[in-house]
Image 1 (cartoon, helix red, strand yellow):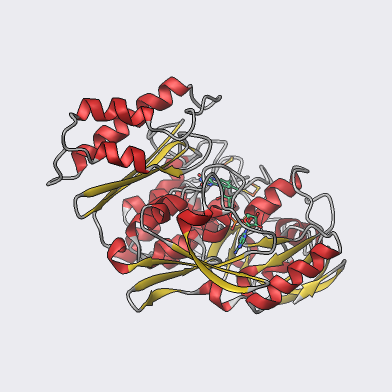
Image 2 (cartoon, rainbow over the protein chains, first blue to last red):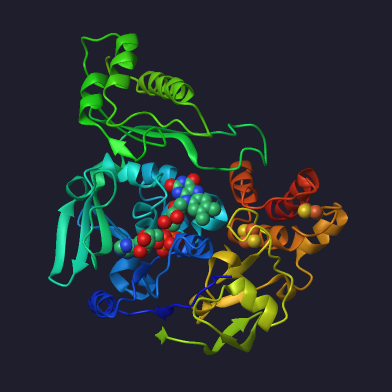
Length: 286
Length: 156
Ligand SMILES: Cc1cc2nc3c(=O)[nH]c(=O)nc-3n(C[C@H](O)[C@H](O)[C@H](O)COP(=O)(O)OP(=O)(O)OC[C@H]3O[C@@H](n4cnc5c(N)ncnc54)[C@H](O)[C@@H]3O)c2cc1C
Ligand code: FES
Ligand code: FES
C-alpha cells in the first residue's frame, strides 16, 4: 500500500502533459511523470518519494512509437523493456534492457523510466551511450532534439517539466557487432539462483568498423562511457595486459565498494570483462 | 483521464465489469483482493521480487504490487480465478508442482502467459520467464516439468 494519496493524470498529448506538470508544480504538488511506475510505487511505499500528483505518459502517442523511420530507429520513452526486447529491432539494446530486473517487471519498466531512474544502474542507457543516440524532449518551450551525451553525465540533466518523448538511433548502429555481459553478485548458477539482479558489472562493447566503443554500469556510482578508456582499448601499440592496467586508470570515478562486492573484486571482474571483450572481436587488432 | 481523489472506477476483470472504490494511489493487488474479493493474487514482498502477485494485463504477466488500480482501467485483467481448466493448472496437479501453494497462482499465471505468447519457447526463453517468480518451498523442478509438459504438447 502507498501510505499517502496522490492525484493521477493520464494526458493524451505531450503538450497537455507538460502544461499539467507546470500547473501542478505551481500548486506545489511535486508532480512526477509516471512511466511504468515501478520506481515511483516502490519508493513511495518506502516513504522515500512523496509526489502529490503523477502524470502517466503511456497515453501520449509519441511516447509509444517503436519503428524505423528514414533509416533511424525511433523508440518511444513509454515503450516497455519487454516491448523493445520482443521487437528485436536493436539487439544490443535488447541485451542491455533485457537484463534489467526480471521478465515480468520488464513488461512494466519503460525505457524512459529506466534511464531517468534514481537507482544508479540504468542498464538500458549503455546501448544508447555507445550508439550516438539522440533524445527528443518536450518542454514548455516546445520540442528539442539533443545528443544523449549532451544531457547525460552522471544522470540525465533534465529541467523540471522536461518530458522524454523518444530516443533515435541511426540504423547502422543497430547492426554493428557487439559484445555485452552482466555479472551479478549471485553469478550464473542454476535456475532460480541465476535470477537477474542488480549488476556488479554490466558492460557493452560496440565494434564500430574496427573501433571499439564501451560503456559500463555497476562499476562506478553511475553508468558511463569513457572516451579516454576507449582510446586505450583501441590503441594498437599497447599490449592486451597493458590495456587492462591502463583502462583501470581511466575510470571516471572510484570503483564502487559496497556490500555486494569489494572494489577489488569489481576491478577483477572489470578486467576479466575487458579481456573477454577484446578476445571477442575477431579481426580487430589490439 | 484524471483521478484526483477517492472514487469509483470500473475494471474489466476475468471478463466481467467490476466496480471498485479506490484512491488513485491504491495498488491493483490491494484492490483485487480487498475490494473485489479476488484473493488468488498473493501479497508477499510487495517489491516486485517474488511474483506471487502476478496477474495478466492484456495477456501479459504483470506484478500487481507494482501497478496502480487506476492504471488498469481500459485493460483486460485476468487473475488466477479467471483461468478455468487451463492446461497449466492440470499440469501443476499432475506434476505435484506445489507444496504450500502460496507462489502457485503467480507461477501458473506467468507460465500460462508464456504458453500463450511463446508456445514453442526454447529453453532460454522458459528460463528467462521463470526467473520472475520465487517458490519458498523450492519446488522448481516440478514447476519446470509442468511448464515443459504443456509446451511440449504445443511443440508436437
Ligand atoms: C524489482 C526491481 C528490480 C530492478 N532491477 C534493475 C536492474 O537489474 N537493472 C536496472 O538498471 N534497473 C533495475 N531496476 C530499476 C528500474 O529499472 C527503475 O526503477 C526504473 O525507473 C523503472 O522504470 P519505470 O518506467 O517503472 O519508471 P517510473 O517509476 O515510472 O519512473 C522513474 C523515474 O523516471 C521518470 N520518468 C519516467 N518516464 C519519464 C519520461 N518519459 N520523461 C521524463 N521522466 C520520466 C519519473 O518521473 C521517475 O523519476 C529495478 C527495479 C525494480 C522495482
Ligand atoms: S508481492 Fe508482488 S512481486 Fe512480490
Ligand atoms: S509451493 Fe510454497 S512457496 Fe511455492
